[in-house]
Image (tube, rainbow, N blue to C red; front, side, top):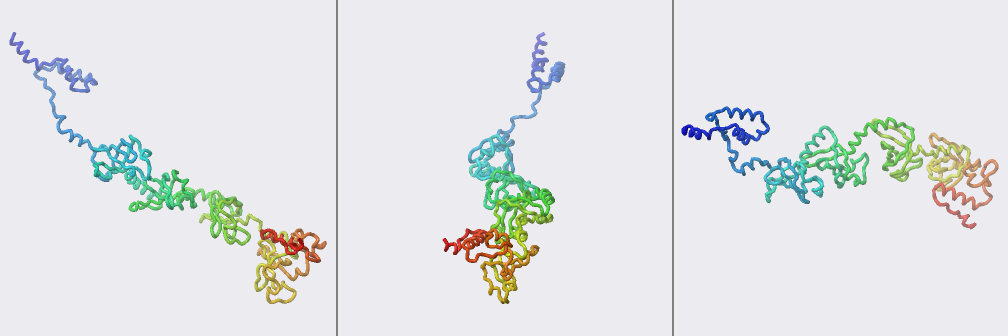
Length: 472
């Protein structure tokens, strides 16, 4: 009996009950509670096993082998100068931003390395918790800090994208961030320069309103070595508006009247915005009178009514006329005067074959030397001098060639005076048939009337005649 009891006591350390196996399994396996069926099976197997068959769980590896420093080093990110890294913003100061990239120390992005924009508050660009990409400028500076640049990372990424866009002749888009000498700076991931002459279809003088405005543009020059990117919004507008221009030109018919605004004045004419495209009024089409400079007729911003003269679809050019919408002074003269009438004029120029006499606003007629006097003369100055005022008779009107032939010697023979002079000087100077008979003596009122008449033609204030002064 004692021997059997002793044997039982010796065997007890190796004896395992069903409860013991279950407890051990639960402690050794954290997933035991989630696997009741498998655990129950294991318990039954353990209960059936004899004490001699039980084998304790063996430890196959030591989880605490190695130092803590080695474990930390194994989990730390390895970085090199020029490497692109990603991290989380953990602190934002006025002059720098701290970023956790998993390195042994937090990376520092100086304010100047945050953006291509100048003098920007870091708090306006990033916030705590933001995920950012940065380029390693220096693995360890003299203060032992890891220096990063978000701007350089953005720059490197942008170059690849922009080169691809340039290759396929695509379009870039970004906000205007600065006005500089000669143009604008556009944020397209890097600093793109947009010359003032390429901002719109026509040159813009005030660039300030473009600040903050997002614009689209074409890349016309790209040089990474010089960090040079030149943009053209005008090229983009021309491309996108090509169909619109074609439709505009197709619907524009020569001879039609359009209203527009003068957009620019140049030496050879004036450009007019017709609401879709600009057309040119050549200096010769600005006025029926001689024009020394277009600026004497129109100014930028003037609203004008013009006639379409020509539409060149191939060159996309429109020719306009301002004078075509105004009354032709030659047509007006021809409609109010007729051959045989007497008109009063002023000698403007002498030529070997006669003299030119102005008989209306912008209207000059020629008195041939043979029509200057009843007797033979060799030179026009034998009869008239420049500036002299005199009566002449209309002997021919060629409206198509815009020529009027006049005669001094036939005027001396008398004739019907043009209606405009009868109304101006009064009926007492003409007979019942309209022939000019004039006063028997110098009439101060008549002299004053002539002065007023020519003052109206020249746009000056009427001057009192000497006779009028004397009578006063």
